[in-house]
Image (cartoon, rainbow, N blue to C red; front, side, top):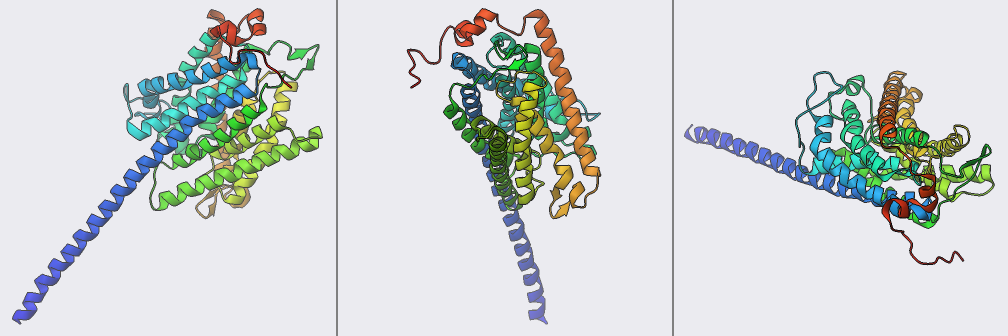
Length: 434
């Protein structure tokens, strides 16, 4: 009897120790996952920062050499302005408190650490999309002001509708994992409005005919696309916002899905131009790869591998037709096709979730058993971001046009913005084109 009474307390004590040990292990695992999650966001944010170099190379290579320094200055401006304005007010307008799901605020200088750094890089990306579309004829001072407004107001307010967690689009069931609409379409539609309001480059349209103005260095543009492709692994993969266990598997899959869509987009544009133009076209193929990346950005967490390939492939085909349509039918001079790559492909990438998107193993799209509900939510989001960006961009640019002017003089444009706006040139000395 005495031995039995002795055993019972020992068993209870052993169970308590085991329970405590299990809890300690769980706490330690959670702490490690949290640390790795923070590290993953920091690394991803650094990759997205490096995308600014990619944008600089793409925009420079696809435009004239006499404006190369101006392009570099605009991209440098975007990261400087975006970092400060988003830290000051942008983060709060995007992730602050809300009572209506439309507007958010939490005070000045909110956010910290890896989260603020990662989100800041997205804001800078939204601004720099506009840069290439209006290359070669826009005042630097005017662009600087628009960059401030984009990173401080236009992008963050609309971003909160879905990413804050209690915005009206979140409640609607809208999905945009990494920003096909929130980042890329907002920047793309702003680029379209800006290109329309600034007007075409001198010599682009002569007697009703569209005159090609080729970029000065397609190798630079190609290197830029490779840099952007690399950075996109952080852009999309980092949007998992965590690492460890199921999150590590999910983030890894997002990176894989992203790469498949980019490859399919590049091939889609390559084959399309080969058939249409008679030869495979490098600038369009580069834009096709970027369109593939944009097309999967919203659905990289809600798409199978096969679904991602088709999303990217169709995005790469669409972008070729969109660039031709905007340039030749709308007569809007988008110097690098930014509106098509980011605006049109961004809309497609958001909508495609409603066609064949998945949630785990369950189809949520129209074509895989999910019905119309998700497609309706996606269409609503696409329209909302397009209207927001177009209207706000038009108002801001109209004010700037009426006060400061948007465009340099004809003489300044002819000389080149490197000299007229910055008093320097990117390529000094004589050039032998071989």
